[in-house]
Length: 92
Ligand SMILES: C[C@H](O)[C@H](O)[C@H]1CNC2=NC(N)=NC(=O)C2=N1
Image 1 (cartoon, helix red, strand yellow):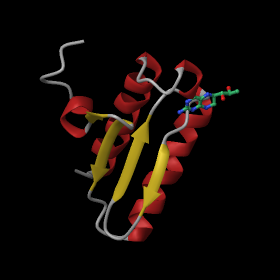
Image 2 (tube, rainbow, N blue to C red):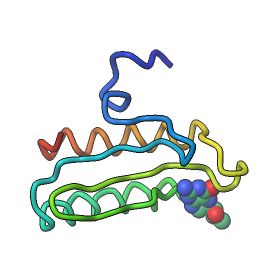
Image 3 (cartoon, rainbow, N blue to C red):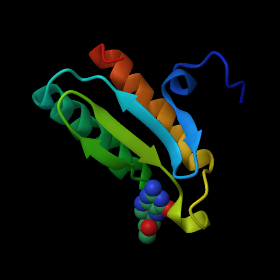
């Protein structure tokens, strides 16, 4: 996957803990709305991020437990979906 021009990659960084992204939600209420939508797509994918909901940002970490805690396509696919939700909500 060309990792230079997709929205998902603009938000996400590969770390030893997995794919990590911070989203500047601005308030905790907006963060909760964002997280609620994330949980919806995570449940549908049966693939779940670690979620750190704070004021004024949400931090997400994606790793595949079933693959000895490595980053897999499941993580990249969910990252793309999450980045799209953020874009839809006008969250950077
Ligand atoms: C049994 C269940 O389907 C698995 O444990 C799923 C659930 N959600 C998951 N979420 C994440 N992030 N990684 C996984 O490997 C994973 N596996």
